[in-house]
Image (cartoon, rainbow, N blue to C red):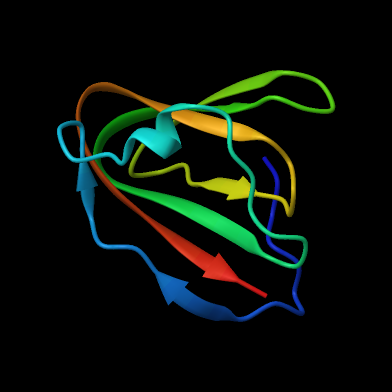
Length: 91
């Protein structure tokens, strides 16, 4: 599992999303900015996190496993039933 670097700090957090309120942009390949890392935190349920490059990697996130988004790497999420999660950004 990828980890956030030790030298980054949180600067922003999204509201909580559910399977019904996930912004459409998160369901399709998108990227963070060049210096922005992110952590996907699932509060309830399961979320499929797909890293599209350099090699496709599919990770199932839940309350015990968060996802780390590396800067500029294309990725997307997909709810697996009921889910509640947020994304926290770091730089």
